Amino acid sequence: MNARTAGTESPPNKFSVGLTGGIGSGKSTVADLFRACGATVIDSDQISHQLTQPAGTAIPAIRASFGADYINDRGALDRERMRQRVFSDSAAKQQLEAILHPLIRAEMLAQAAAHAAPYLLLVVPLLLETANYRGLVQRVLVVDCAEKRQIEHTMQRSKLNAQEVHAIMAHQLSRTERLCHADDVIHNDGSIDDLRAPVKQLHRRYLSLASGNI
Image 1: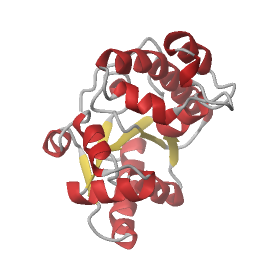
Image 2: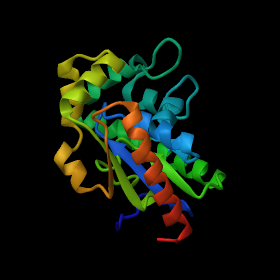
Image 3: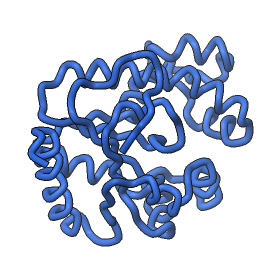
Image 4: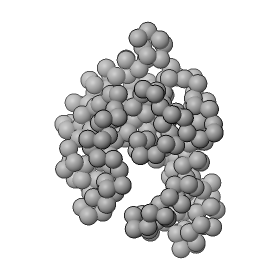
């Protein structure tokens, strides 16, 4: 896959796989299974949460751009208020992304440089929707499931209603478009036990690719 480099930093100097998928598809579960196999996992969502916690690096810029109303009493990002804003205001969405994506990307690169693992698994929900991260990976792994399952899982996990989930999905690539960009696909329409074999198989393949044996 010929991914174009985004940003000014150099990509990780090791074989990297980008794990992505629609909201509620099971990305975190699949990432945990790769981690259990011994893979080094770097999760952009976890980094984003760190950046927007009290005293997080992104907080001053968010306060300056959006105002104190978007910072809660603890000094962290008011995620619910911000979610409502960005899904109704495309300019605000772009403004928030302009703050967060460079910081997330820089932290991912810093973490990548700190690991000596054979390969990296970079978990990026918006890997295919933004050019910020495509240049960091050599392969794209998509976690795929039926849209009904996505909606049900997200509603259970995040306490959002169906309308809110549909609004989030509308800002992501369609299932068909996402699969068109995939080098590898893990189907998540069963149980966690059904995921173990394909994860182990891909882990072995990525180790071989990283070592140049394929």
